[in-house]
Image 1 (spheres, one colour):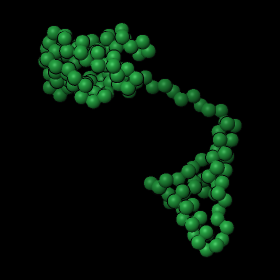
Image 2 (cartoon, one colour):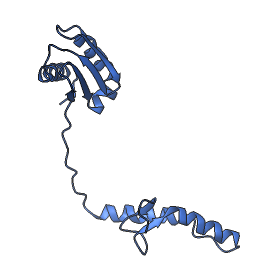
Image 3 (cartoon, helix red, strand yellow):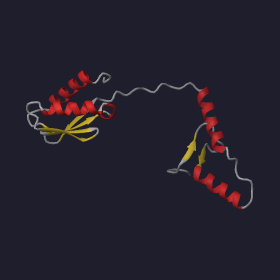
Image 4 (tube, one colour):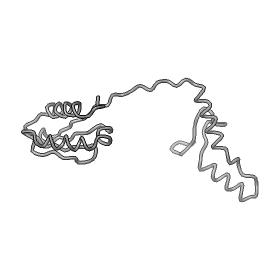
Length: 149
């Protein structure tokens, strides 16, 4: 019934297991308009408390870590490469990535290199293979970024 609608759902919800938030607002407004007592103001707080209590009783399953690659190199023509940077590299180590691009520009066979976006590099290197570019970037990152793995 609430498919594609905002709901609070959890093991501690009443009745059907879902609280449809817009409905709560409408019901409360109608009850106040008619002079009836509104629904309890603490209904969402009570729901959150029940969920927290239920979750604290259950043992949490460990979430498996997915190793995201440092970079992803993609090319349509073998001359121009799109290089995607992992989020932590793009955001937490942005200055180092700028330095890496400057050093990459100086490499023989690299015509141009710049950051197209915070997490995307555009490299024009017709003499390089995608594997060579990927290897150079990974070696540089592992050498200069202390917590990269």
